[in-house]
Length: 202
Image (tube, rainbow, N blue to C red; front, top):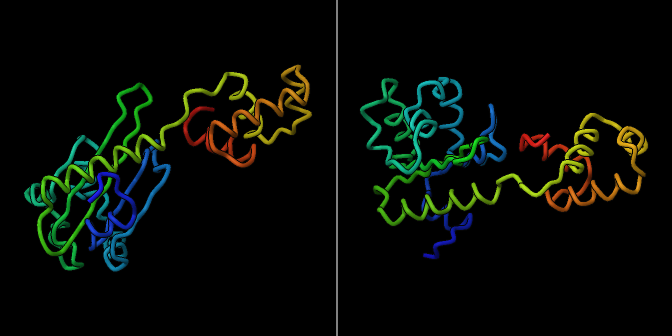
């Protein structure tokens, strides 16, 4: 199996479902994929398991990897045991964290019904999450002028207003927004402003 995992390989490694949360800010992840069985998602939500889930608790306070079987003793609500009824018999959780001041965390859980995860599979899943975490990192090359223009777009200001307030030409504002869109991989100025806001840059 290749060391670069794509969605197909993830399904091979997690045939009972998986969950990925990338770059969790104050409350919500920047990107979230929940491929756990729908029955389990409904049960989990209804029972408000999030508050007691030993997997989530571990993911928020550790980095690295852990098999669910190692968390079974710290599970007063027996969440891990209940997951087994939904074919999620064996699981592994992976958590990564930035080391800078605006550190963000990403974590993921992968499950299967047939056997425990091997050490190699656990390493591959950690490498996968680390790569996705890095890929979704905010760009660090936006200039102060570009961020200033994006902040005004976010506030709903028009090109003419932005140019007037910054005492520059509309052409200069257009160029700043064009550069910012390129760096953020956005199609429109509004989308670029939304992304910059999501990254906590403006």
